[in-house]
Each structure stands twice: as structure tokens, then as C-alpha cells.
Image (cartoon, rainbow, N blue to C red; front, top):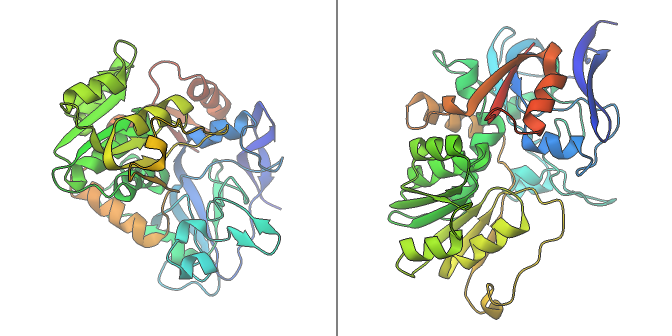
Length: 357
């Protein structure tokens, strides 16, 4: 049986490069040869044992590649075509999909409730940090890459760009809104770009790393608050003349940033939460205004599916968003353990790494 190289979860603290059989293709599947992928912050949660996955699973959920083989029932695609697939791969016919919540496909089962059911790559099935990837429900999930766009230009679309934009969308940003984005990692930077596209008149980014602060301004931030030098809540209150923000986007997944995002809201404001939390959250009584502040708290899982990917790539192709500054390091798949070490320890100003087999 032909083999491929893959980054495999062995146990908490260990993801290693090893060999696996190249997957067989079912009628509705597609096998893509990976040309570029990357490491996500969620993969670090997996590495640390903070998010449980099965031992022996191939990790990764951000694929760019070329169709190697199509299932017998797949129509509308051809072998050799450049494609991406979203980190979330809805079937299109589940209860969640029929309710319009494609990201939660598979969440409700007769055996109980599994959150993030639509996230399968590197979660419940083998993922993208490999030479080949099996894409389920290919006609729902494969999106052709427009001519003229490079792998790195579309590399953020499967997850980071979709997630960041969804933070702005779920926040219901309107033209003229004041928006605060807490943390300017890759998702926060995309949320900043999304807030600008949604029509926010003032965007306040919260960050302390100089290189990320600089990119935040390129992505659309009007102000960047250095939380290592000032209290971000007090500074945002000052910048808004005590009014507060219409929408606060939390993009780190920490109690401190969640609480700060809640504290800077105007009455009736919206907290849009994108962080992946690894511990229980507490809502302070005063920040919550005892439940009487007309606040909205929204959580969002990265939207997927081919139409979402098409829209994101169209936005990139139009020049309205440029994610190229987010790729700061490049590795071959053979060096993926080294890439994990760099990314997991956030050394050398890393934002995202491009992995090429």
C-alpha cells in the first residue's frame, strides 16, 4: 500500500513526522495532494493536551492543494485542479446544515452533544499536515483557486481569515461603529481587517508585541493600545470619551481578555468571542451589569464550505484584504517538528508558518 508522510499526534507534548497509508477514495470524496498548509493555534492546544484527539491522528486543517483523485460520484471538478477546502467541512444535509448552522454539522448525535462537530480535519479525521488529504463531501467543500492567486495568498482562507471575518460578522458591525479587537495574533489581525470591511469607523487593537502592532495598523487599526504599558479598559474608555465600543472582539481565549472585552462595551454592545478557551470562564457581576446591560455575547466557529471559501478568495483577489504579512516563516514538511517548536513557543516574531511537502 502506498505511503505518505504525515504529522501525527502521538501523545500530549508529541506530534511527530511519520508514515501512513495514502487514503482510499470513497464515492463522494476527493484526494488532494497538499502543496501548502500551516499550523494553527488550535493545533498547539492539541499538542499540549488541552483539546483531546485520538492518538495516531494526522493533525492540521488548513489545506491548499491539487486534486489527485476524485470519487466516482463527484461532479463539477477535475483531477489536476488547484483547490482549497475549509477547516470546517459540512456535509450539507445534516440537521445543523438544514438549520443554517453549517459549522456545527455533526454536533448533535444520539450519543450526546459534541461541540465543533463540523471541524473534522485534524479533529475527528486525518488532517492536512501530510502529503495527501482525503476531503469528505467534496462537492460541498472543494473550492477552486482563482488563476493568479498563489498558495500563500489563499492559505489563510480555510480557517484564519474565515474565523477572523466571522468575528466581525457575528458582532453585527455596522457602518460607523467603534470596534475593539483584543489580541492581534493571526485571527485577531483578520478580525481587524474584517471590522474595516464591515464599515467600522474606529478600530482599536489591543496588543503588546511591536511587530504585531505594526501589522495591525496595516490591517486597518486606527489605534493600537499596548496593554503592557496601559490598562486597556481605561485607555479604550478614554479613546471613546467614556462611551465604550459597539463591538468588542475577543481573539485570544483568556479570562483576562474576555473580561476586558466585556468591560469596554457600551450599553447594548456586543462581545464577539473567537477564542478557544481551555478553562472555565467567569463573568464578573459588575462588568455584566448584573445581567441588565442589554449586552450580547456571541461565540463563533469558523464558517466552512465551498461558498464561504469562494467569497474569501474573491475578497483576496480584489485586493481588499492582504494576508501576506501573516506568513512569517516557511518550512518543508520534513521540518514540521521544528516548525511546531518555533510556533508553539512563539519565537522569532512568528505569526504563521507555511508548510510545503
